[in-house]
Image (cartoon, one colour):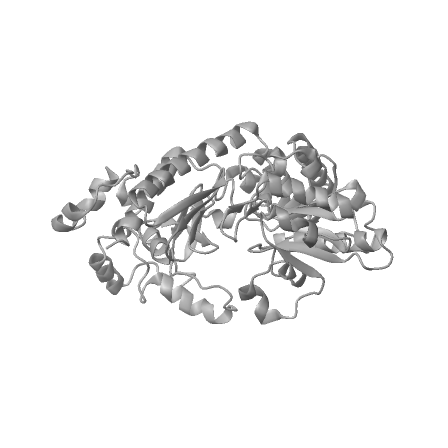
Length: 482
C-alpha cells in the first residue's frame, strides 16, 4: 500500500521503470510525506509557525520524495542560521532539526516523521520518550537532583548494587564487585584507565607496569586518556602528543598477543564488538587468548561495552557468552544506561576496587540521584529476559533483510556483521549517498568504519518498523543506482 502511494506521486514513466522491490513498507506514506505535514509551531524557535511560500513551492518540486531535506528558506534553516554561530562546530550535521521523539520515530520542525535506526547512536535502547523513563525522571526531579559526592544519596548505591547483581546473574563478569558512576562513556573509560595505572603502581612499585594496550580501529572516547587508546589519526593528530605508555595491536590477531602484552602492561582495553570501527566482532578465541595472556603477566583486562552492552547483542553483556576465564577485571558502560540522560559507569572486580583509595578519582555530577534513579529503572528493563530474547529475534529479521538485499546488489553489499541489534552492512562504496537518500525517504541510518552502514535501532523496535525500514533502505539503494 505504502509503495503504491509513493509511486502515485511519481511520474508514470518513472514508476514503470523502477525495479521490483524486495520489501514493502507497511506504513501509509502520508505519515512521512512532507507535502501533507503540518509544521510544528516554531514561534519560540525561529519566529514562524508556518512554512514560507517558497518552501511549499520546493515541496511541490520534490514531490517524489516523502522527506526532502529542508530548503535554505525553511523554518529549519532559519533556526540553524539563528543558533549555529553560537555553537562550536564539532559536528557536520544534515539539514533536519528534530523537536520531538516517540518510540522509534523522530519529528522535525516541519513535522516530518523519520523512522530512527540510529537510536541516538545506540543510546535510546528503550525508544524515544519511553513512558517509564519519563515518569521516573520527572518524579526524581521533584525530589532531589544533586547533593554532591561528599554525601551518600539513595540512588548511587542502589544503582551500583543493581549493576553488580545483574552483571553476575547475566553470566558476565562473575567477580564484579563495585562501581564508579560518572557522566559519559569517555569518562567511564578514563576512570578505567586511571584505575589500571593505579593498580599497576601498587603491584609493581618500580613504576614500570604502566603500558596500556588497545587495538586498531578502536574507539574509546575523546578525553586525553581515552583518546590515547583510540588509535585513529583523524582523532589523535590535532591533539598530539598523546598520553605516553599506550601500545596498539591488531584486532583478532591471536598470534601477536604474546609480544604485545608484556610484563610492562598494566591493562588491555578492548571492545567485544567495535562499533565506530565498523561493527567488527572479536572472536572468542581472541578474547580468551587475550585474557590468558593478561593473567600470565598480571595485567588487567578491560572490556569497553559502551556501545555493545546492556542488551544490544541479545545478552545483557556482549561478553556473557564467554567462559569465566575470559571475563574482564574492568567493564565500562554508558549510552543505553541513561536512554539519553547523561550517565556512565565503570564496574570493577574486588582486586581492582581494593586498590582504589579515597581521593584517587572523583566527579562533581557523576552519581547524582536523578541520573542514577533513571539508570536504575533502565537496567531493570534492559535485563528482562523477554526483551533480550526479542533483540535476538529482531536481529535475525534484520539479517534476513540484509542478505536479501545483498543477493539483489552483490556488487554493493559484501558482508553483514554484528550480533543482535548492533549490525554493520559492508559496502563497496561510500555510503553517504544512501544515507541521504534514506533520510529523504524517512529513514535515519548512520555509518561506521570504512564504507559500513551501521544499524543500532532501539531494542523495542517492532517487526513492522523493521520491515518498513528495510523497504525504505531498498528504495534508497535503488535511487542511488541510477
